[in-house]
Image (cartoon, helix red, strand yellow):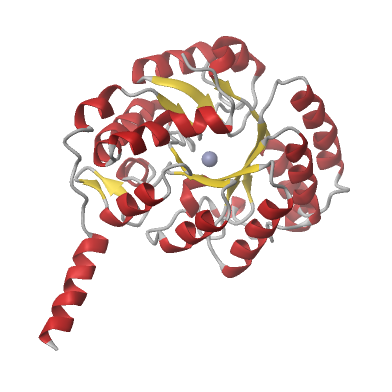
Length: 315
Ligand SMILES: [Zn+2]
């Protein structure tokens, strides 16, 4: 009885507790080249392309993007350092105009234009994929942008089909449920050349569902933006952080990242008016995440996975 109770207590401490930094990683974590795969460069109220390059340069972020908005001026400034994606403004436009039913309709006019435009841009090598598509954010973000649709739907299948022809990616923001797991696994199996990036690793404290999904399909990966204390504090989110805070990385997340080193990526998500905190967000990744990983895992998660997935040039 006592032994059982002790076992349970130990399990609770080891799953809820903090990981220990890896002594071999502490120095490397401060300087390692970062690929930021959730770097929004919005059209509205834009920071200049030069501002973005300077922020990246100041923080050792070599590559960035992989979510909307696609901006040609940012592409010209960053050249091969940019990971260009289209579709986020269109996804919002369809939702605000036609609601959730518009988002699943491949005949929607905005989507039909986007299918044609994206195919052309992919063919010309100007973009690498799509995102961020919010298919299920029913409990996060301002109420007016919340929605929940099936991720496997006819409109989404068209995006997967297009991405699949070019070895492209689709970045999806979703929350876990049984339907989502079924949907993302069938899309990923049907379109093996498309890489799915799950934003914020599904925004959860519980790593089990995301680990199970990554374990089943190699072409599904996830990125860890918004999982720390900076987003919670800056955005006044009424909950504790999911994966890390100023005291370090939670041990269940370390176990997860070491178990799937080829399928986890870094992201900043300077959304929602917090782009001025960009340096603080990257500092948090360097202080509260990277030092806990083994050196080979750190290299993969910081940049090697992104270089492989997006065919990036090494600098
Ligand atoms: Zn985002």
